[in-house]
Image 1 (cartoon, rainbow, N blue to C red):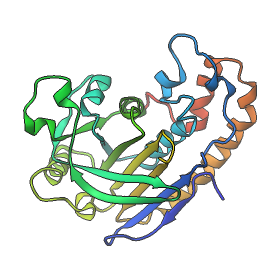
Image 2 (cartoon, helix red, strand yellow):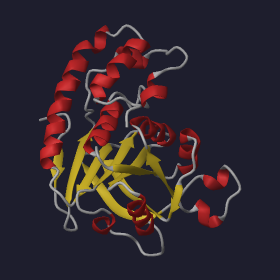
Image 3 (cartoon, rainbow, N blue to C red):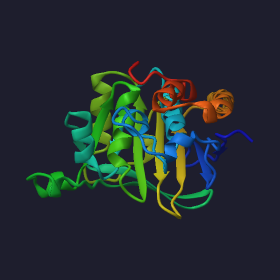
Image 4 (cartoon, rainbow, N blue to C red):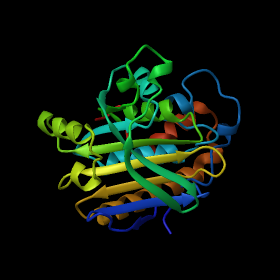
Length: 268
């Protein structure tokens, strides 16, 4: 079985694919230096949100999300840590009322709670209104590094979550997405994404009994593209694992990660 095996199940009339590795990680042979002291920046975490708990699989996830959504405009909601994400990215989000919630507390299973009322840490960080506190933040992702920065902002809990909406480019479509995620009525996923657009929820478990999960949804059939990416990542992971033990230092590790992830962090 490929390291990135997605299970298919149609839900609510759209195609849904889930990667549920349980306790297994996509990369099983880690660079030994992850578990040693690091010199000052740059480090695996500052560059790729990789540490000795959430290891090289995070770089694989970043590459998967970015490559899968190529050609679309990407907007993301970092669950709860809206203000931390704004500080990390250096810009304010568009406020919306709803965010997505996946619970991955059982191996190879998830509880998909769909859209839930937005929350944030805003009240503890700066003066704000009650309404602003209980709203989610939608951030534009211009480059893969923006996605890494969101991961750095949310990897603070037992489980962390980022939801990406890859939509048709253009201000009119963005306005419609914001409208769909706002207001008193709970959105439905099939109505939020359209045609060839793609929804990706990335949940990362950090503590015991919390697990990683990637949920992908679209009105179109993404199985061929997911299979293609899974095959490519299988080759990339194998090549990385073959050289992991021989990487002498942090600089060498950071030089190897782009080949593992398949992306340039600063490319659009």
